[in-house]
Length: 97
Image 1 (cartoon, rainbow, N blue to C red):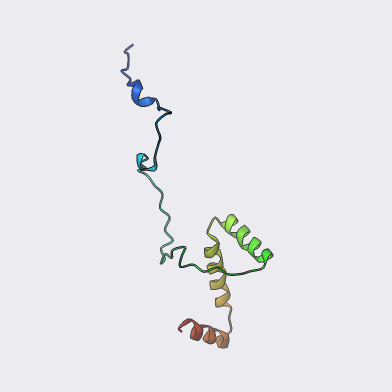
Image 2 (cartoon, helix red, strand yellow):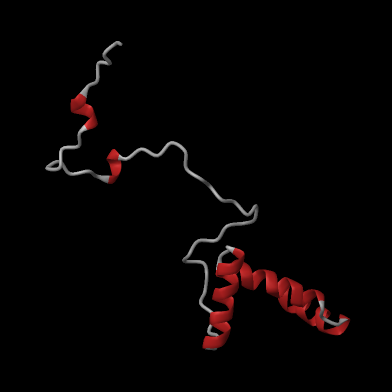
């Protein structure tokens, strides 16, 4: 049976030493991309809704594992598809401004 030379100095963490964010190196980071134009948090605007509606959006967000703004966007796209022709024209007119 052979003995393995192990450098014990590197495997122990000195607790008196401060660990900083620059000391941490992450090689395999997960990047999620929905494939759409990305907006920053500053560009997003708050929308006021009643508490039950907010709870419903939050529950759907949790169940579908997607951000709340993505849930609202998906719901609006589905609703727009159900608009009658005259309302759709008004909607498209307002969107193009």
